Image 1 (cartoon, rainbow, N blue to C red):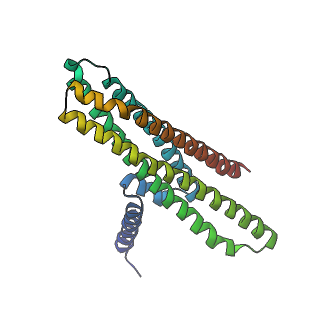
Image 2 (image 1 turned 90 degrees about the vertical axis):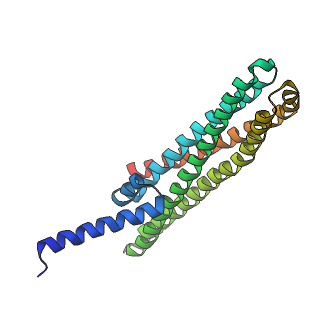
Image 3 (image 1 turned 135 degrees about the vertical axis):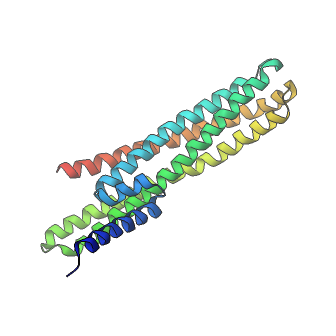
Length: 224
């Protein structure tokens, strides 16, 4: 007979092991707690919502950075250093927003894999062939929808990098050339960067819409 204290010790070892698995899958201790206790479907919905909200925030940050960049052009030379500091801060916020999106998309992928892996295994537990076929159809639809959603998020993630690179180049150039001749050189880049940011935000909006549609489908199935 196993003593109660040993049973309690084993239970805590199991909890720690599950937390460790969740941590390595998510990179975050709070997320690992969710990973251990939440149903896979609820976890996936939460992760998709978080990634969607992160894209909302990033779109605002990139738009703010573009606004600060455009404000540099036409400034008197005496105001350039102050505006450079604002532009540099906006660029750093955009970088942080991009990193947050990447982290949250990774979490969506891990939650999606967890849900689909569990669902795939449980398909073999059906006794009624018609119910199994229905479950298989729902599984395939969810997998395809999740694949589209993740692809859309990854596309947004990739689109951010050249925009960030352009911002970084212009911030560095302005840092080392705080004078009107530097501003003249930046004017030619303003329209290009604005166009790239417009495309990026359009991609983000499409990805956000895809996330909303995915969440709606999952929640509708939960109600039905």
